[in-house]
Amino acid sequence: MGAVELVALAGSVSLLAGWRLYLCVFATGLAMRAGWVALPRHLESLDILANPWVIGVAAVALLLEFLADKIALLDSVWDAVHTLVRPVGGALLALAIVDANDPAWQVVALLLGGGGALVGHAAKASTRAAVNTSPEPFSNVVVSTGEDVATAGLTFAALASPVLAVIVFVVVLVFSLAVLWIAGRFLKRLFRREVPPG
Image (tube, rainbow, N blue to C red; front, top):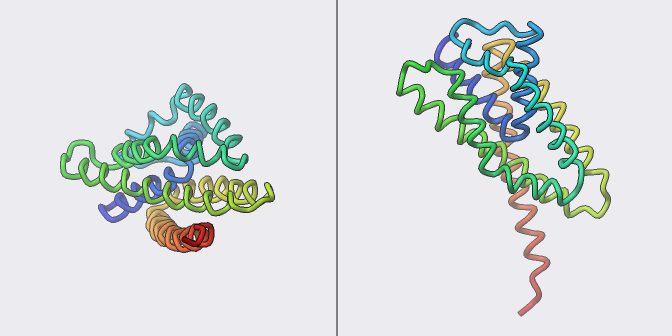
């Protein structure tokens, strides 16, 4: 796997970790443990994710996130708490993907991973803030379930093929930036309407 593919894989996983950190860790670990994804030699550092303890802790955290994410307002509290957790997790996942012997790649991985997870997290949190303005509870469940399915599928795709990793990276980055732009405009209009005339 070349430098471009490694950066794309690190970027893909970190962007997706911004949506669902625990699902990324759990899905990657489970896929490796079950032999569904055979990692190349240079990604052997990700083997730690296949450890039963790591999979177990990720599964518990995933279950908590799955439940919290389906309840309006509780999902916003969960997102607020994870504003720091997801970028750190994304940075660590990206760091595990690149060459650990090269300090330059370590810095690139930390910046890319943390930044990517922060962009993914900001898109997710902005979407949730907009969805939570709806009085009915079903839109929250639909959006959350869509995030679950998309994160799992895109994580497996990025791990399965270097070409898919590049595609996933570009698609998720463009999607996240578009969501941020749209959610920002929506929230700006919403708060403009709620300000009493002065």
